[in-house]
Length: 195
Image (cartoon, rainbow, N blue to C red):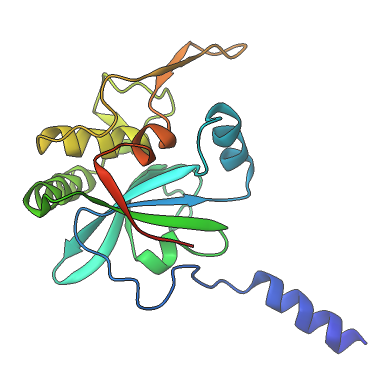
């Protein structure tokens, strides 16, 4: 009986990727996930039109597809600040962080998608910290949706447009931000796979 309980406990904590095998990622693809943690629930409560709480962009890192994303609360080591990170797709879609996911691709414009991906690598390389103020007018720090909109704007194809949401939370400065659904529901993206 104890052995069965121990095996069940280990199975619950085992990390696996929810990204289906055979899902071909390309540089510039926009990837979405929904987790079950407190931050995910807060984003979903704010984003009533959305199914996802986090977003990233696929980049080519020396021939290996990776995901660049701005994320809080996922340190790689003790003392690791919240920042723009580059993770494997398997880690981005780890069952510890993702319950469902989706991969979207810019419709009919792979050159722009490649440029956006290269700009995302630049943002990662400069050591950009996570923007806890959610201020998309200051790109010295970035949150996830800001990062994706920024790199696609810089590449010449903004995905969120001018749409912004305003939130007034007790004890905090007003927040003006882009939400995951603003990008996910963009008519410029096609779904490659949802899972």
